[in-house]
Image 1 (tube, rainbow, N blue to C red):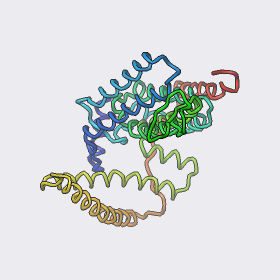
Image 2: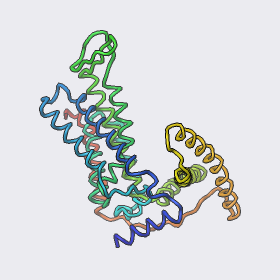
Image 3: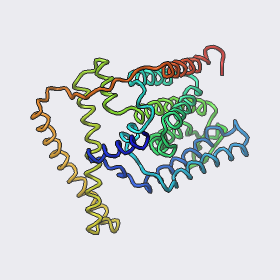
Image 4: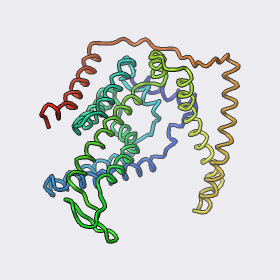
Length: 336
């Protein structure tokens, strides 16, 4: 049954012309290598002065080696989020329960004053996606790599303060000024980054375990305006159309000796994106004509699956909410 679901999902991508390998493994590996470097630097700066240096060096080295090994995975096939949602075992969980549970968890995480809340959600979402949902670990890390990289860059910007003299636990002299990391900035950065990581991990779990029709059906039951739902689906659909067009144009250019040097790469990239803009308008016009010919009246309808709610699913949802709420309230209850 598992292999049948995977073949059906891959067949769906072929029907909708979604390029399964649109992002090359090499580029994805480069992103993870950048994420590994940022993770080591951020961890070093965040815990400098709080953990003994030999132990801190070991932690950073283990994290970097682990992410580097993931980036060198030789059998990695970069699948689209749609495919991952279709082959996930958690797609059979009631989408309404899943959607509202994760939304409440995001709200609690963002409002929390305890960094452990975001760390707990990051670990819990990883366990649910990989062990309960059957998603491969390197696929999950590939999806999180890019947003985590942006978060770590922002975290490094929060960590360092410019001062005329050294005033922190870590001080770097640059162009006559000092870049200092103080205990206050470490605590503030840990809270902000943990909030963001927890919220992003919840959104990631929702995207890789819930097919798009289920999300749209949940929003429709929540009385979300039909115009917003239609725009959301069309934008999401056109992401894959543009990816497919770009993939085809780039392959066509390479087959004609394009991108052979730096100057040719700049010229070919400009031509591809100019043509891509024109082709996107053309496809948008054809798509709207097709929708009107099928009596489109500001409402895209999908056949909704009837998924029941089991005791185990409710138990997991309530447990996550209770643990997250307790961690969020721990600072006010005298906890850490």
